[in-house]
Amino acid sequence: MADVKLIIGANWGDEGKGKVDAYFSKEADLVIRATGGANAGHTVYYNNTSGETVKMALHLVPGGIVYNYTMCLIGQGVALDMEVLQEELKMLSDNYIFDPKSRVKISGTCNVVMPYHKDLDRLHESLKSKKIGTTGKGIGPAYSDNRLRTGLLVYDLLLSEQELASKIAVAIKAHNELFKAFNMSECVVDPNELATIYHSYGKFLKDNNMVVNGHEFVKKYLDNPLAKIVVEGAQSTRLSIENGDYPNCTSSDSNTLGTLSGAHLSHKDVTEVINVNKAYFTRVGNGPFPTEYVSHINSQGELTSYEKQEAFEGDILREIGKEYGATTGRPRRTGAFDAVLAKNSAEISGADYLCITRLDTLGEYGLEHGSVQICTEYKYEGKNISYYPDNMEFTHETPTPNYITFDGGWKIDSENMKTFDSLPFKARLFIKIIEETTGVPVKYIGTGPNNCDLIVRDI
Ligand code: GTP
Ligand code: IMP
Ligand code: MG
Image 1 (tube, protein in one colour):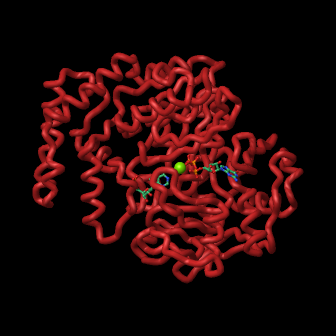
Image 2 (cartoon, protein in one colour):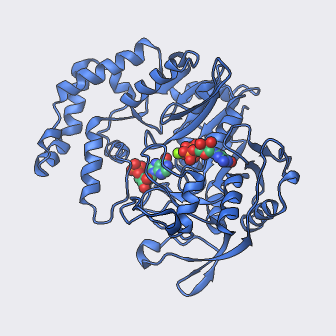
């Protein structure tokens, strides 16, 4: 059987999964995106033909596309936005990435995000008294239609224009009534107009031979004992619709099990599950964040103006880490490493190893701020607990963290610190506490922004 690595976010997304993906993808035969859609933002680095390192943000196409010999699959669990896909393919060609159209395959049973899903996302968010801060990319409504069995699959785009128009007509019947009722008549859909556009997208996919039977496509690789498969998880454990902070989560199961089925894999196929955590935590959008630091972000998730000398610890961390969303540009909420949450995520996703990214950034924050913290226990409902509660939405209480605090910080010279033993003492201690609290070995450590700034421990 092939070697299958599953890379799963353990916090609230944006853990820097892109770096771990890159480490494995450069040697992979197949890289798969399995869940979510253009709500995910993935930072990818590659060396262009002049040898310069170029940074690129991808939302749908797996980051493995930057390696010439890698095939990429957008699996059945993805909510596919055809407009974004076309923009990304163009951007990749413009950046001289080798023949992206022949190396990206799309499962025919992938859900399609339609323009009306974005209008519905906006409408449903506006009706909520407590906003979840959706990215507005139409992902939730696309999955909802899929569950109602009125969603469109990629295979639908390959039908005749008339057949597609009749499917769209059924899909939008109730939505059009909703748009009229909420005075959004500009959003009412004409199925024939939309069918013309989406049929032409289907033609594009067909002409480029991009649509595949996902199961059979993956099986060819699985059956080859020399093949290497990487599954690029999107979002994270805490954003999963199944185990995340419902309702403050996304609409797909971004955990191990959802990621597997979205990638046309079974649990028996996996060689290694890697849970990626940041050395400090961040979150975009609303929802509980036990170790959140005070900062100038208001309840709408907007950054309010402040002078440098008035910065709170959350602001200092956000500025040092440049924590702004890759998809929406929104400022991220920031806070301390939460080992209770990391343990819970590792249990849910069956993590074999942890990756801790941005150990360098945390050290710099410690030097600037005077200390770094790690939460190893909570106080919740009057008791000390060491698990992540599932009823915060109902108790209206966010756990209070009990911290271990280190004075100062550390400096990591990623060029010269390539082994765990070469890291500063406090940085190593930080990692040891994470291992003790979570019970999972930290095999991968991010020490700088570049792909090569990754320590891989021999454990
Ligand atoms: P996912 O959303 O988890 O896929 O991650 P992402 O790659 O989209 O994360 P994000 O948008 O936060 O971008 C990651 C950024 O963090 C990139 O600019 C990386 O260079 C940077 N980064 C990743 N790991 C490290 C690290 O260990 N140290 C530092 N200093 N930067 C890192
Ligand atoms: P949606 O998936 O766009 O509906 O957004 C639901 C929630 O998940 C919001 O709080 C988003 O900010 C968050 N979210 C969705 N995708 C990502 C991601 O890739 N990184 C971080 N947060 C995300
Ligand atoms: Mg991201």
